[in-house]
Amino acid sequence: MNARHAVAWFLVLLLSVSASAQVRDEMLLKRAERGKVGIDPQEIVSFKSDVDVAQALASLSEMAVKFTRKPIAFDPKYFEGKKIGVDIVEMPWRTALETILRANGLWYQEQEAYFALVSLQGVVQPVTTTPTVTQPTVTQPGIQQPFTGFAPVDSAAMVAKEREVTISAIFLEINTSALRESGISFSIFRSSSTDWNLGVQFQGEGRVSSDIFGITANTSTGQLDVDIESALKIFESNSLGEILARPQVTVRSGQKGRVQVGEDFSVKQRTISGDITETFVSTGTILEVTPKIFQHDGMDFIDITLSVERSSLVDIATSRINKTKAESKLLLLNGEESYVGGLFLNEEQVVREGIPVLKDLPWWVLGLRYIFGYDRSLVSKKELIVLLRAELVPTLQDRVTQKAKDVIDDRLKQGRKEMQQKSRLEKN
Image (spheres, rainbow, N blue to C red):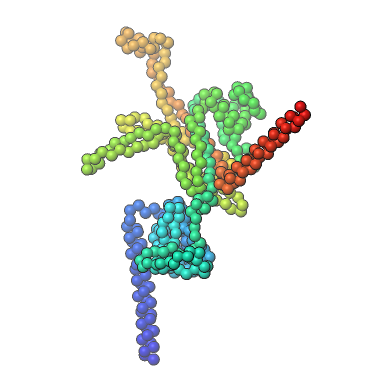
């Protein structure tokens, strides 16, 4: 009886020691990661020990795509009913992945386009299907072999399934001072609940005439509703605005696209050791987008991380930059339009006014320029509006199919044309 109690106490003591050692190892790992410089708080994850391995790997795969642009390739059916068996408390996603895989006797290898799982023991797991390779497989100790519990992943097939998004933008700079002097205001609206295009509404105190703007449109008292293209013509023809750029970029889902219309200038700095470093700063009209395509209930929509900037170098000696920048996240449907506005900028300009000719005389001509003229400082207030449109690009398979249809149509048209020519010759 005493021997049984001793064995029971020994087992309890052994389990408590192993549990405390596991907790201690996790705490040390957690402290080490927190002590690292540059850990993004968005990379921190937490899982309970009773979470399914497939569910945890799916969440970590989303983190991997977000921070490395590479998914984790795995078969959820293989991990059916399996738990991670370890508590993950505020760990970086990569450390959490390593901890979960280590607890399940696995590891990973980072490939060019994805993360592949491998066996931690260096022994190939048995498979139920008959191998197609005639040569025997030799397993060397200490070398990680591919984990055959998963179906082989073709990186080319994964890339071929990815969608692309075309982002079209218009950078429109409006002179709000001139617009106010003309007695006209405008607003941007969506045409209807079923129409995803934007429109512009002009309002004035009196009747807004379409003849003044040189376009054909339906008008009402003090109001004019037009589409975007007509509004752009109105702004440019009346010197009320200017189109700075019309960038268009096609980006793969989850990738970053950047368009810059401008120039880079360098800033030289001297380090503590006396070396001179040169840093380039981008200026001009800059558009950065990161679209991500999602599908829900048969509906495709695009999550866009957007950054727009309009900047210019004021003084190269002091490296002072005038910058107007906006960052946002948008949800758009295929073909839907949106805009970013309210980016104001004040431009100061000194002009010479007074009696013509006399105001421009040199200072040494009896000082007449100061009598008949003066310098006037004009401040013009401008607003930057960025119009956006997102469109899904057909998949590679759809493009190949469409190309085949075009070839068939061309051949049919050519055949009809030859038959018509032949019938004409027979009649003659």
